Image (cartoon, rainbow, N blue to C red; front, side):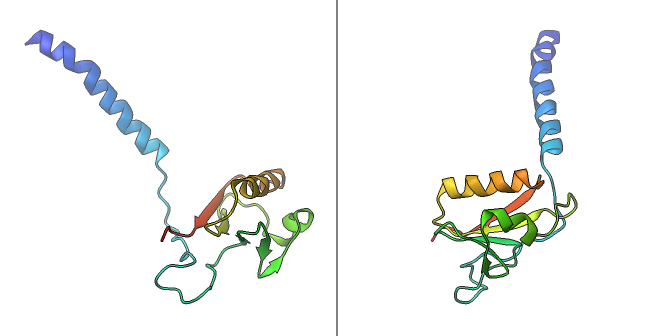
Length: 121
């Protein structure tokens, strides 16, 4: 019986470590996410409430106005650790456009963003 307990001890340790990892790594948020474009509750081409909307053509829009990269930090709310920046991205956006946007945001001091995308059809 003692050999069986010795063999189970590493397995118990592994399960405990995995449990601790997911407790620490998982982050629960009390703030609800806005509705995504194209969801059943929204009609037509309405966009969700987001600080920044990225179109499939690679345009960056703040409050419905297209903003070039050099003016983006001035058009967005100031970086805040309490409320991350919400970015709504259209389904067909190129990854290179998204990477360049995230690079500009990182250089502007944004450390945490919430990326909203459209669900697949």
